[in-house]
Length: 295
Image 1 (spheres, rainbow, N blue to C red):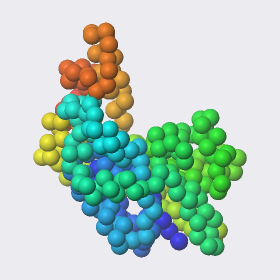
Image 2 (image 1 turned 180 degrees about the vertical axis):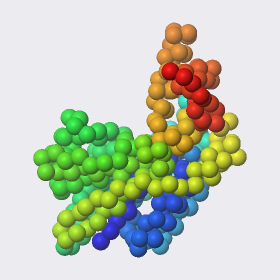
Image 3 (image 1 turned 90 degrees about the vertical axis):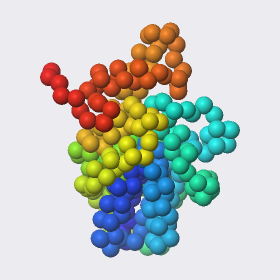
Image 4 (image 1 turned 120 degrees about the vertical axis):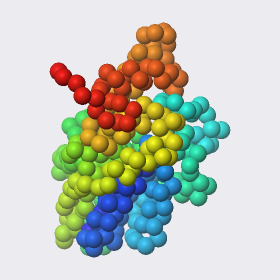
């Protein structure tokens, strides 16, 4: 039995389509989806349609990520303080482009799952951790060791960190397939994994796949998401182009600049001028391209 594991799509339907095509081309009919399906990239409805197709025609195991939680909480709390601008504009753009069907789908998703099939070892799966969709499970960290120690099975499949790879602690394994939509490293190739059921055990095969990046990058301007979140869209495009993650670096720098000049900073009220400075300091232009510079 083989299972294709997809996580952290973040609205990159072009990368998701390429990953689905690859898996189906290998004869795979089982899919495990680990959350963060939308936000950050344009046209979230295109990503949702692909997920609905997978659910309809294949065996799918689907859970919720922290981005789905953000969207649901925003909706439940009376559409709070998201607004146009690089701090929260991408979230607002996504929210405005989702349908009632999408929100109902997110609402009905669990945040944790346990795979059990006769004749093969079981495993557990989640987005962040079994108890918290936003928890980060990095290798060697204390919380990761604690999480693995408390597993009922011998393996946990999780996403959220965007870092592809495995980690074993006291005989129990954590497997992260990497990110489909905002992949780190490997030159920005989309990343996922295939679990191969061999007898009573599982072996993970990590995939790094090239896809049509020009298509998704072109959509950033056509969709209007760059007007909702100029700098955030630029950082996202930069990651798609290069595989380098600078989103938190740029965010924290913009917040620091705001605090230095104004004496206080409160997300999402970070003026665009600070984002522009943070982008320039990191040699990124508004198209997500690297600005030539010399050390």
